[in-house]
Amino acid sequence: MAEKFDAVDVIRTKRDKQRLSKDQIDWVIDAYTRGVVGDEQMAALNMAIFLNGMDREEIVQWTQAMIDSGETMSFAGLSRVTSDKHSTGGVGDKITLPLAPLVASFGVAVPQLSGRGLGHTGGTLDKLESIPGWQAEISNERMMEILEDPGCVICAAGAGLAPADKKIYALRDITSTVDCIPLIASSIMSKKIAEGTANLVLDVKVGSGAFMKDIDMARELARTMVDLGTDAGTNTVALLTDMSVPLGRTVGNALEIRESVEVLAGGGPLDVVELTLALAHEMLEMAGVHDADVDAALKDGRAMDTWKKMIRAQGGDPDAALPTAKHTHVVTAERDGYLTEMDALAVGVASWRLGAGRARKQDPVQAGAGIEIHAGLGEKVAKGQKLFTLHTDDEDRFERALESLNPGIAIGDEAPTLRSSVVLDRIS
Ligand code: URA
Image (tube, rainbow, N blue to C red):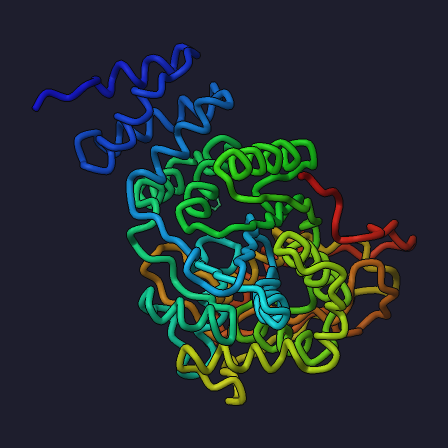
């Protein structure tokens, strides 16, 4: 059968700053999924979109075409209302781990279909896989059972959801076309709409460790995603949150699990607790649970009980010792003063180089690798005081990690002005 369009014409349309029609978009996404449009052609089209943008209608259509490339799920048969959270990714972003059981402990279902990490931002599944026995891959039937009890599940997204996005995202990753608002918004929202959650809270990260380095760009990304969700019938809000410094005091897989368990035990770093509570509040309000005392559920063990059930439901032992790395290296303060800079990207890349992340999809990650942060931004430090502990199984990784970490850290004479809250704005 003859094809409806020619890929070269579609690429030329966007190259020449024209709008793509609905039919052109439907065809090019479908033809690329079928292998009729080649990688080099889709790469050229992505670059044309990166340079010339898409209007709202084009973005809606691009998103819909990616949804239509695969299956859609439905949680309508569950006895609980669903509320989901998606983060655009950051350094030390372990919030899903305490958040999902916290929200589920109020009777709401939390389906977290997650991915593995690529580049300097960690993947939630990589973190959970450091728990002995825990399995990311489960059947849809099992997922539904766990969503009924204990009410939250964090598992690998099936290959059938928005397969066009999987192919296009892999191509964007190797052609420098990831950080483009229409492409990020359609990529994230096609998966979330196909997943079928009733309510969705987006955590849009802003700062050096995020895709969006400045707040205006982050606001535009958030607005675009909230509109896409709302138009598709998914109740959607977004929080813009700071990612100029790492979240919490640990970066790395098992290290972040340890810190999440501290939060579930009623402790943990203030910024992690603040963001967990803010997102939980949004997710619960959207699901119709008003004025929930989320803080109390962290302090009195309800969220911890749900966490343990969730981990056991996927074969994990929540009480088992977590893996540790073979080698450590301590970084100390070179002088007295205030910690005036701790760049999220520098810390994220250093952790990745220690083995916590992967450079290629097929690479393994080290469960114990990563960085412990002993002093926070703005803290007064004395010469020789411990600032970081680096962890890895391969001693020869320390040098490259330090090449990333050191330029991102500064000690000055004046205390810096600190943000008043990790949450910078809210878009609904
Ligand atoms: N996460 C996604 O799923 N897609 C993007 O384009 C960026 C982040």
